Structure formats: C-alpha cells, structure tokens
Length: 442
Image (tube, rainbow, N blue to C red; front, side, top):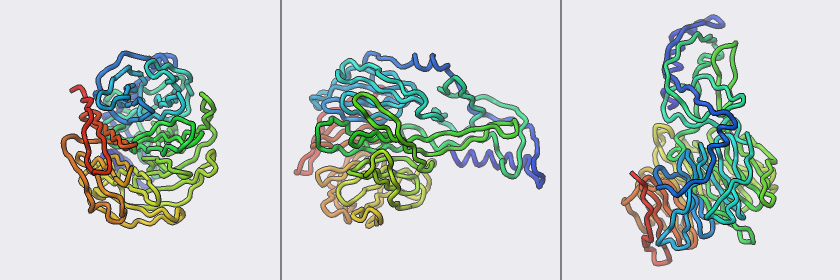
C-alpha cells in the first residue's frame, strides 16, 4: 500500500510541483470515499445473535473454560471449551469493526472502531453490553483493503464504517511542504493478517484473566488494561483536501470492579504492531524492532530500552530472561526476510540479540513448558532449553493448516487461522495430539 500511495504522490508531483510556493491542479483519480453512520445508528449495530460459523477468524482469548474468537471486523464468537475435544459455539456478539479483545473477572473488553465496549460475561452463555466508552479510540478507521488513497473524512456527529471506491475530480493546491494533501497513508494493514497483537502473562492470584494470542493489541496486567491504538489525524490545508497522518498510542485504563477508567495516553510511534505484558514490563513489537516499557508504576508506563531490525511484521513473546520475536516479510511489512530473533533481556535496560534463525512465513507465536510454538507455513514447535540454539531444535511440524496465531497454556494448544480453530494437547513427550477442529465455513 505504501508503495502505491507513494506512486500516487509522485504522479501528483509530476503534474504540478514547481519552484513556486504553490500550484493548483485539477486531478481525477479513484479513491476510497467514506461510508458513514450517525452516532445512534452506529450504536444500534451492536447486538447479541445466535451462533454463526467461523468465516474469517482473527484474534483469540482463552478465558477459563471459554473461548472468545474475533470474526474480523464483525464481532466475537463465544465458545464453551470445557471439553477441548468437543467445543460448542454458543452465541455471537455483533460488533462493527471489532479486531481486539481481552477478558477479566466477568468483563469482556472489545474495540468497536472508535469506541470500547464492556460486556458482562459472568454468564458467557448470555453476554450483555454493560458500558460503551465513546471516542476512546478516536481516529480509528476501518481498513479499505486496497491501495487507493482516501478522500476527505468528516466525523462530526458520525462514524466512518466503510468505504466506497469512486472516481473523484477536484482542484488541489500543492506546495513544496504539502505535496499531496489528498493522499492518506494508512499504517493499519488488513486486520487479521498484517496487524500484530500481543498476549498477556497471567499472574497468580484471585483475578480471572483471559489469555490472548501473540497478535493482540490488548493486554491486561494486574488492575490495568493496556491497548495499542493507531490514531488517524486529518485537517484541511488552505481549504483544499484533507492532509492525514497516523500516530501510535499506548492507552492505559484502570480496571475498577466492572468499570474501566482511562488514566493515560502515551505516544509510541506509528510503527507499533504488537504488545506482550510480562511481569512488570510491556514488550511492544514494532515493524522495525522491539520497544520495552516499564509498568512498575502501572498507570504511567516508562520507556526502558529497544532493539531494532529492518522493516517487517513481528509479534513478540517473553519467557524468563528471553524474548522471542518473529519477523515476516510481505509487501506490507517490508522485504527484510523471514526469521526468528532470540533476545536476551536479563539486563532489561540493554536487551541483546543472541541468535537469529531463518523461517518461511511466520505469524503468531507462544512459549510454554520449554517449548516455542510458531505459526510458520503451518505449525512448528522448538525446544527452548537452550534459547541460543532454539531454531536448530525442532520437535514437531505440520503443514496441514495455515495458522495465524496461537495460545499455548497448561498443555493445551489453540491455533487459529484461515482454516479454523485447531486444538492440541502437549506434554513432556514432545508429541502433539489433535483434540478437535472447528473449521471455517467456505
């Protein structure tokens, strides 16, 4: 997308930029034109429905004996997983634009484009909307899923819920500082396959906290919910088309009983993709590396350190003194290769990349019981007893399906992907035994 947007910019520059301060030109081009709903219409789209098949599953949350699976941009499937060999799909929560989710103590947290929703899941068979936090993700836009530029956006009293592709003719004013006021640069890729999301580490104690996959942008640690938000900013320049840019934000919500109060917003750059909470730190997977934030003061994360690499999509997980980060090269993510990085974080202020191993097309990953699980052209499992050589100690692999993300937890492995939900048991014998499959509906 960036390549084609850049080409569009280049074409406009050829049309009109000269040594003068500004040039007016009439241009005609195909663009994504916003589709709006009023605020009230938008709120009415959230509702409980009967169970429906998985079609385009995305992110996943394991909450006790239940699973919550995101249907990309449409809502959340609720599944009774008390018997992993025979999971039962219970109901579906329709949530327009939903991509991320997390759960804690009877509350399910979910994004709804610009809003955050809190659902009562004390009875997961019958979830109900408890609270709508309006505008906490202001500037969130649905992905257009194409490489066309975006036309003017006006969200006064309404919400952008989609796009129409139309031909636009307009007069624009270009100058040396604002060469392409009509171009919109998305940092948000297609929600399931190119936007990473981080898992949270479940700490012992009385709280029941859901376990997310490694591609989540929501993470819960103690009494706080941390979210990654890509905010789209726009404004008019000299009365002409919209100038737009993106900023990455780490938002902090204090969880009080069944409420969430936003207490902080921190700029983290628009290259942020993943988030993994482990002990008293947040590990942010960036498209060009990893950043670490201390949450010793949980309401005020503080930048601690970082590592860097060439451009690529990369979730990160942590166990003990090591972080494991996969980098995937695609047209969106960059062309830096496909590999696993092993990072020594024993000195959190100076993380050190100790090893790197080639992979094919890695997506999500997870670590548990001296095993590293990676969605890589299927599923691969490695022995982490010696992290420096983990990539040479493969224990298991299959190409029966293409995984997008996974959760290994207490000898239960859940893998979600384009083929559906796969569940396995694993133990010290290094064998994986398939328990069940919920296939997608073709």
